[in-house]
Image 1 (cartoon, rainbow, N blue to C red):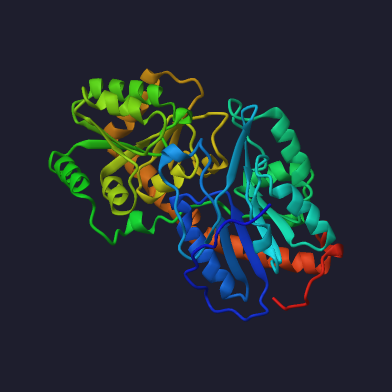
Image 2 (image 1 turned 90 degrees about the horizontal axis):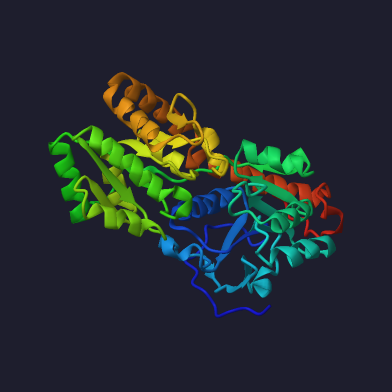
Length: 412
């Protein structure tokens, strides 16, 4: 591999020249993840560890979400992409940038080709390697059996694991990773702007929100990438049934994706349906401030954290392919319908909670509690602790490649 042109660096928090260096090498950076990288970089610096971030662009399957970001202080290196028998393969030409790195944090993805040589090099003096992931892809419509088999075998070579949730940890343990090499990060997202916006929303959003408030409408929303995993046609069936049942209901969709057009076309004949595209910051906060329920029949992940932050309880279904963050949902903060519920049953659940003010308030209280539990602060603390533990483990020779690693003896 060879490197691409140099990148922009916005400066680093002050750390000593001999501090251990950790590099996140990510395929791409979604907009929602930027605050995490900023904060873990600062938290690590306070503990004497330098954090770098190297990233490229999203693969073709993610580009229509329109949510990628170039981080000012990070190192941007364009990826090289191929598709082989339906599997996306990504080469990250960053090897020359990794000299002097003590710990690499890579995504646990079979198609990221950099993972394999770096885990091999970790055995003969290269940097320690940590994988960050769920353990396994449980989406039966997306998972590749061969790729998942390779992933399970290769994962055991890693020096350290950063597991998204407690459920992810159990998956890693089931494939043979030692418990004492796993950090559970409790994956989250920064919701500061959702809870306390510091800027003014766009004119169209401000106008819509003001009108719905004046008219005392009951508002549902979805904030998500609108791809096939979100079951957009089924969502529209549910919304039609709710709107047919009550004339005070309006729905706002925030997000982009392959299926966004389904809702956009439907909105032309449904005055209660508002499709605003991908929105962030003050726009998302303004819509979240009036949303009473999150109607999310498809794959749910970090969206649950935003439902907590806005106290708009999620109404979803018990799907086999939810991301592990769905573990954060409980009867105290969400409604999880049985698998294969009909659109009529789903719509009844939405209308029922809107009609029962005391039940809605109970769920909203549960959202407030969950928002404090699954916070970006906790995630940054957990991740930083894991970084320090991984460095210490490698130096002591406790990790798989630790006995062959040439450490400099620098204190943490």
